[in-house]
Amino acid sequence: MCGICGYYSFKKEISSKNILEMNNAIRHRGPDDEGFWISDGSVGTSFSGQDSTKKIKEIFPVLKEEKSRLALGFRRLSILDLSEKGHQPMISDDEKITITFNGEIYNFKKLRKELESLGYKFKSNSDTEVILKSYEEWGTKMFARFDGMFAIALIDLEKNNAILARDRVGLKPLFYYKNHDVLVWASEIKSILKNEYLNPEINWQGVYTNFLFQTTLAPETCFKDIFSLEPASFMTVDLNNFKIIKEFYWNFPYPKNDISEEEAASKVDKLLSESVEKQLYADVPVASMMSGGIDSTLITVKSKPYKDSINAFTIAYPFSEDEVKNASLVAEKINIPHHIRKVSDEDVLNQLKENIQHFEEPYSSLEVLMNAAEYAKNLGFKVVLSGNGADELFAGYSHSLKLNKWLLMKNFNFVRNFIFTKDPFSQKVKNYFSQDFMFDFFRQSQVGMKPLQAKNIFKKEIFRQINPNLKKFHLSENKNYNGLFEYDMKYSLSSHHVFRDDLSAMKYGIEFRYPYLSNDLIDFVSSLPEKLRYNGIQNKPLLRKVAQNHLPSDVLSMPKRGFSFPLTHFIKSEKKIQDFITENLESLKKRKFFNMEIIDDSWDNQNNEYDCVKIWQLVTFELWYQKYFENQ
Image (cartoon, rainbow, N blue to C red; front, side, top):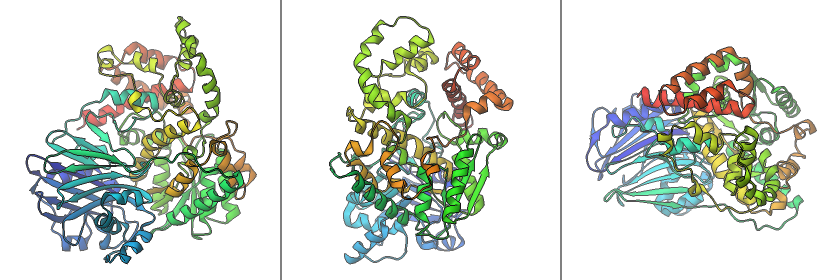
């Protein structure tokens, strides 16, 4: 797990100060080592950096002022092969291929054996070298073979190509900027913004979708001309003519397996165990983040047979007493050390502004995961198993239970044409009967602003830059649970949850791993008939059947709750946060982006938790603007 960055200046050589500053901007992602590689397009040279290990500095000179067209930067968080043999950028034996890689390939040992049988020799025990040799053997077909999480930047000087790639479901982020002169990429946008070609501008289209969905829908971001490389895709850049080809190497399989519920549950049980075993492999201590719900406690229970030294930790926050109790119950039952960190209102306030601004777009929540990552680091863990992904894969969200009702009620959407009153209830009804597509149903469930609310809050001159027609983001639009599943996986998981996970964890140099999101498990569950995955009555029916064999009844019967600090409670009860909001809203009003009277009305009339979310989106927009547009 690491941080990567780089650029290709198409028309001229530029100073290495660019790559040095870009790499320093993501120092938090890899405190253990750093490395650089620069090239004129025909040959390349490796360099160390100020934070490189002593041995690496003895091998490569420290990068100072140099000129180049191509540059790669790397920050290392050592997880596998802690020696200098795992150093990046890593170069092929013939020095024609150079790679930087962020992530973990869980099946790298299997791939290594296959490559060894084909005659390849290895110098290290790292998965990075396996990727390098895989490219030599299979080219871009290698991506479909990888089971893991990855963002890869690869330079092939022989073919004069640069290749950027991302894992199947987007567990590792990769952003890029391109104009006629340059291509810039990095694990985080804050690194891209350090390049001399960049002058940050707001992408109002991205802000609009952010307000609607709690996140900006990939491939867009809230920055103009900065994009997120989509999951399961790779981009090939011709270094001669600067043309780009983007290809997708995987998609969700269609349901086809006609098996019994018992057979399906048994197979899921087996595949999850195999995934846990693979993801426990590390050369550093591993812990399980246990919230007390089904997803994370099942992962913890399954970890114990494969790693007796496994620890678990739980983050406690207001109203999470039942979750903490259940987590402690499971830890006692399987006899593992269990650490509990209570997060108070004061803890949240202490780093509130810094944590919000670490995210690279407005946000509608308070992220407990940053507290979890900090706690894991303080406990001495570098790798943390997470239950994230189970809700998307197994129909865990409460909105999925409303799907059948919506499929019926949308036949009456013509009712909206007869609603002329403007009171809040009428507008709520009109919004409900304006959900024509599965995309709209998914949007409605994300508790962000409604389209009319978002439209009204923007100044007219700003809204004219926005296209409210979002059909380009529509997926297959299957009129059943499988249609909703695609949106949950691509936008709820890839664009939202794991993006937040990555930024939260890597702020403290922690690697989150996701046993529910292995290739085999995703492929198998996706191929099951709907009746086994979704019943419209109970969330996660299939996973619950698996968990019955492993978890106490108290855990199985606990209602679904999100893993986040109670924002509404915080806003209603904490005077400091109220002052914080007022201060930032006053600053926001002076920018003339939004209608002041709407902002005032929203703050003065807090009727429910959704009103609090809307206010928080505006506050975090202001903080995002301060960080990335005023403080550059």
